[in-house]
Amino acid sequence: MEYVIIVIGAVLIKNILLAEYLGCCPFMGTSKKMNTAVGMGLAVIFVLTAATAVTYPIHHHIFTRFGLEYLQTITFILVIAALVQFVEMFLKKAIPALYQSLGIFLPLITTNCAVLGVAILCIRRDYSFVESIVFAFSSAAGFTLALVLLAGIRERLIIADVPKPLQGTAIGLITGGLMALAFFGFSGVDGSLNALVQQ
Amino acid sequence: MSIFKEFTKGLWQELPPFRLVLGLCPVLAVTKSATNGLGMGLAVIFVLTWSNILVSALRKVIPRKVRIASYIVIIATFVVIVEMATQAFFYPVYEALGIFIPLIVVNCVILGRAEAFASKNGVVASALDGLGIGAGFTMSLVVLGGLRELIGAGTLFDVEIMSAAYRSHSFSFMLEAPGAFICLGVLLAIMNAVSAPSSS
Image (cartoon, each protein chain N blue to C red):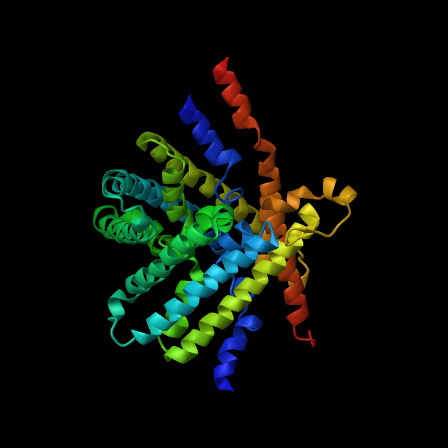
């Protein structure tokens, strides 16, 4: 049951994009077209889950054992960069069809702060390994949900008559803000679920 | 004069979060108050200037193929220094900025300047470029943070500006994520309107 709470928390209540402000650059950059948004979202789900699965054992089995916690930032970013390279090479060989659709998004993900951010959040919140994986996967799913929703709106916005200074990123940001406001409606759901479990 | 220009271009022509829509996450996340914005800005100035200096000094040594990885290591080194320094000397700032201090590593503004400027120019010009872009970034963070703090909490740099009646019924959504997105969008639109050529 606590996994369900983690999933709902990460997808709806504390959506990494709309409440935790992680991954805003691709949120604005890749949300102009639906195809791009779906591709980016799938690539993020894949890499984010894999990155957390790799960084978690590094932190808990190497850093804490030898007192090297200060190496966290520098190691995690290198591990993520290397992982993205491996994933790219593997997909190119093994599943060319998937590589075709995700290919161009993979290199961009290294500098997506959602990946490094979630890896560090899992450590800071003292999640267990399984909890970390569940949290990473559902965070990425929440990211994809928000990205795809925004892309849907922005495709319509192209044909709308937006005042000139607001065109492009400005209206994108305001739309994102209104979406965040809508997601605000979910706050407190985790409390109710917790209460339900306690009963 | 031309050297001076490297500094001033960051303040308006290439003002980071507005002109180049890069590094949005910290801009949205830490601008709950002007103080937090200032703290984040100073951290970015430090990392950006030093990484620019080092990248520029090593630009003939680093092989082209591994340059991005090398830049990330250089940037991450300075980020770790900032992280440890704020933890030791400015603990409240460290608490307030939280996860966004390590995330300076993936701030696209810094990697962008290393790739677009420092890898092609001399040390002095790169240092000035870093200082200028960093100063512009800080300015934007303080303006956005100040605006959100003023409307959302009725204070500015923790000094009470609005009346007590306003402060107890302020627009507190400005302090949350929706306020951040909308406020940045409106500021961006104002900047577009101001800087648009007068003929159009």
